[in-house]
Amino acid sequence: MKEATCRTCLHSQCMERDRVYPCKDYVDQEGGKKMDAKVRCIIKRPDEQYGHVTNISTSLKNLQKIVGGPIETIACGGSSVIICNEEGKIRGLEPNFRIGNGWLADVIVGEAIVIGTDGEDFCDLPISFDLWKRLLKGWGNK
Image 1 (cartoon, one colour):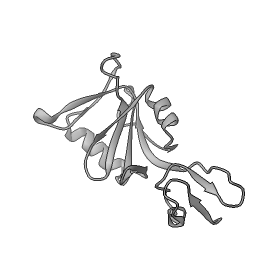
Image 2 (cartoon, rainbow, N blue to C red):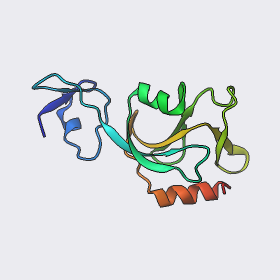
Image 3 (tube, rainbow, N blue to C red):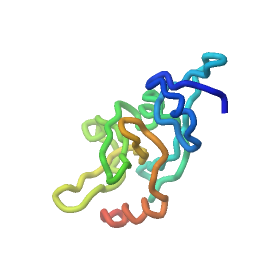
């Protein structure tokens, strides 16, 4: 791997991780080009039962494009979050899935991204697709 420095935190060790880069802007020291890190996540659309696993760029512009507007993150346990449209309920987006149980339950509307977190940065989703399916069923989704 080329020697590079993360523009955000300036630590070269950010570039040494083989599965994900924790910061969003990278500069290749040889050419000054940005490198776009992609992370493994699950994208769930309202018309999908469980969603699908894919790799996406974690740039704000890309996340907003996927969810169709300003983003909101909702903790879903451990080091995983759900990213959805912050204005989804106000805009009347289609219900997607239920999260949580009892009085803490909520409904996620519109397209959603399930992604891992590393501090304040997004990273590979640390849970398997099978565990995600069990979580959805446990929250009362069909």
